[in-house]
Image 1 (cartoon, rainbow, N blue to C red):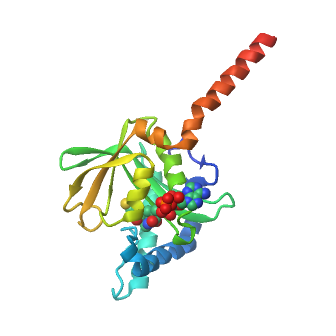
Image 2: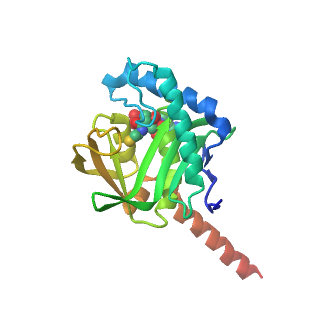
Image 3: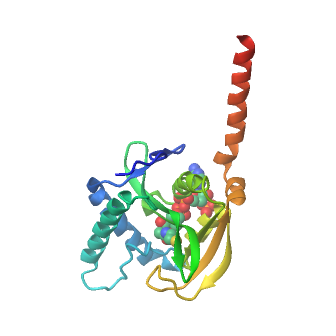
Length: 228
Ligand SMILES: CC(C)(COP(=O)(O)OP(=O)(O)OC[C@H]1O[C@@H](n2cnc3c(N)ncnc32)[C@H](O)[C@@H]1OP(=O)(O)O)[C@@H](O)C(=O)NCCC(=O)NCCS
């Protein structure tokens, strides 16, 4: 299995690593929470993650949600074995290991309608841990590695997905188009965004601090050399 040189990722409050088979029960809980949240907060602009989305009233809804969770974990395992690896479908955990969400990025471009799409970011957070900045922190932690290779990331979101749009804007994204039907999300419409590397780092206080950190380290090395 190809090893990644940047996984696991540690951010100030999170651990981002691979999914495990033992994540099934907790992931199922999150998938149910997401669907339940969509049932009661759709009017507030909350949309379910299309991968786990099963509309209210669907016969055998719970069974279908469980199937989707299994498929998600099987996909994550298959993607982990890709050579070269393209998709990084990552588990987002608290430092104690508790799974609270996901962030996924494609490191190799995808062809859609003859156009190359870079990044194709995805994410979800357990609604019980929402609105604490965890999703944004996880996305920043992973996308930082994407921008080591590329200068622009493409991302789409359902036009009604207020919380996803806000996250995209928080990481420096701007809407550049609109697709009436996309192969993502059951052919539903998608707002098309781009995040440029410079805007990503401008928007990110954590990464903005990095140059200062390097300056401190370089100055320390200079001081040590002077004292020899
Ligand atoms: C999209 C989604 C991940 C966004 O989740 P979220 O909880 O809004 O995002 P974050 O975890 O980054 O939290 C951000 C909010 O926490 C607030 N916050 C609270 N405490 C904070 C802290 N300590 N640090 C940073 N932000 C904090 C922020 O101010 C922000 O709120 P605001 O937008 O009102 O300013 C979530 O709605 C979701 O899982 N949706 C279902 C799946 C989905 O739609 N995925 C996207 C498909 S395109």
